[in-house]
Length: 430
Image (cartoon, rainbow, N blue to C red; front, side, top):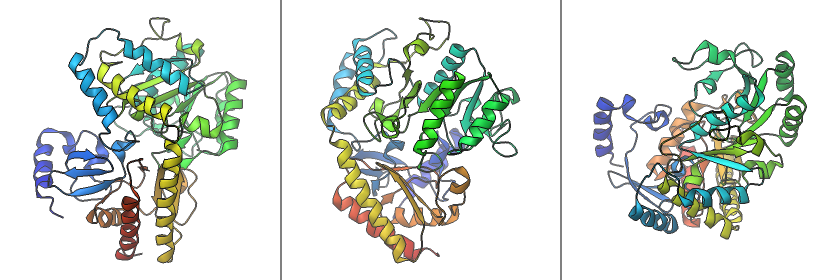
């Protein structure tokens, strides 16, 4: 595999961009080697600047449910571009988009469009604080909600204390208002609620996590979270930036059968363009300016290009509900094939999957939370990653990121991936 041009571009990029990339995981630091610079995508494939072809399993980190550059999204964008790229004024497509989201996700009674998942989660927490008049939040170790200051917090001594910043630039004040609980451990939540009685505004969770690898919350856990929030007048937020319209039409909340007060979205609702949204209970959402006193704004919020692309994506989902059965069949086929390869080398490595999201963990212990996820052998994953890359398979360049299947992946793609995985496992030192 020739990557000469990617190597040259990376060296040049490092002169002008921190680390040579505009988002850290792209730098390949977790797996080693030179990041590949992509030139185009089509269907299930990506092509780098050196003309190497890859079967893609990051899918733009989630939004490419239909594969790269599907015709219906491309057509929607071309029509929108003819009319203008940004107005800074309301457009009809924003109303159509909002109505469609409300139709597809039953818990949403009102929605506000923003520009990224981080904006969505930051804004949802602010709305919850404004609505409740309380300051503290509970998040879970291993859940990622974007790079807002009050999310970049890790657990202190154990997961039942005030958090401490994980990034310079995050203040101790932010950390003091953020409490960190253990994922899938309801007792850790109960203890924090008891210790901070009447001070917690919101509990925010990825009900299906994608950023410590794919890990599903237990049904009983999310149901008890709902009960605690009802009893303590705490706003329950589901971060569905990754899972919204990916796992089901109604997202993770549809699968888990729990109705949050607020939800955050991104990825698929922009059809691959930069977008985010937060919405839910009408009484809470009417606290947001200009209806209420909680301020949040954005020059490019509701951008017509993103709205038209996102609308095309959601209309496709509405008109083709069988898309999720197709994804399930393809994903299960891939999972079973990779698991057979794991058995063939005499290992019991964990493969977590829910719908079209999945993660291959290099640990033989069941992965149910952050502490079990981090037992995965990241060096071994790095070797596996490069063996797969050399065989034309593009996986997440980090152990703790989810991989995604699209409806564009063919049986030939999946079979090639399964064969490559078997060969890769035999090639690395286990």
